[in-house]
Image (cartoon, rainbow, N blue to C red; front, side, top):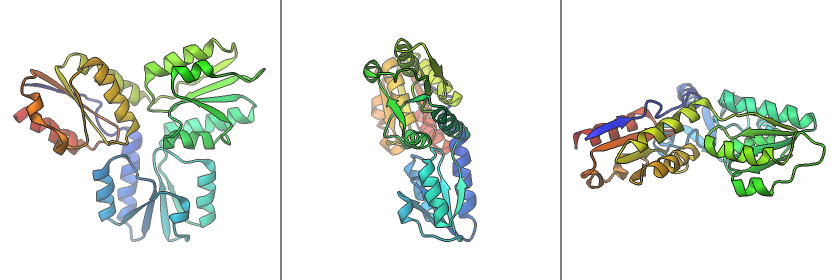
Amino acid sequence: MDVTVAKSAGFCFGVKRAVDLVYEEASKNQKVYTLGPIIHNEQVVEDLKKKGVCVAETVEEIEPGQDITVIIRSHGVTKKVYCDLEKKGVRIVDATCPFVKKIHMIVQEKQKQGEQIVVIGNASHPEVEGICGWCDNQCTVIETEQEAEKFVPEKEKRICIVAQTTFNYKKFEDIVDILSKKSYDIFVMNTICNATEVRQTEAGTIARQSDAMIVIGGKHSSNTQKLYEICRNACANTYFIQTLDDLDLKLFKSFRSVGITAGASTPNNIIKEVQSYVRHE
């Protein structure tokens, strides 16, 4: 069997930086919290739990005091959450991805300048919730072309458009095209991370050239779900797994070529394990 593994599969820069920071903090003699799971990968979160790292879903769950360390994950948080943590007097380690941080600064500045903010992304995704919080939630979140068609610009306001860093690039372009017809004064910032674009493009290329495609990632990972959609559109035999345990190799007996890609929250050891198993079966 011919097995092709995407070069871009696995941890992106922002996720690797965040995970490394948590492991570094966990090695110190202190109580460590992450605000939400550090990444959408159950194996990594479980390993960190064994090292004493607690996952808090809300600021209220975190104990106050300078001997408590709270790590903000790569998705980022709202301005209010950041202020609430400061009020608790805890030590804050900000692992927000620099590309996400850049969007926070853009929407904060543009909202203060009186522009209408449009965020292209999933409204319930933590990254988008964080972005909205940096412009006082004075923004519109658009995820589909249908929502874009219904969008009504505010009169005499410039529109500032940004995107969730892991959003599907093709969908972003299609939505921007629709919005561009609604106003002549639009400022578009393509804030989709370059690593996301590369990963999505490579995944689609490999899927088109393969009899079957394996997409590895957490079931709650937005960027992995988008990879699955892209691969599924290009290759009917596309399978979404979290670990090797989810893989039914009987399904692959008749395939001559198999492609493998993985989301930004997938550790390299899981990718290698799947690759090795598929190759040697």
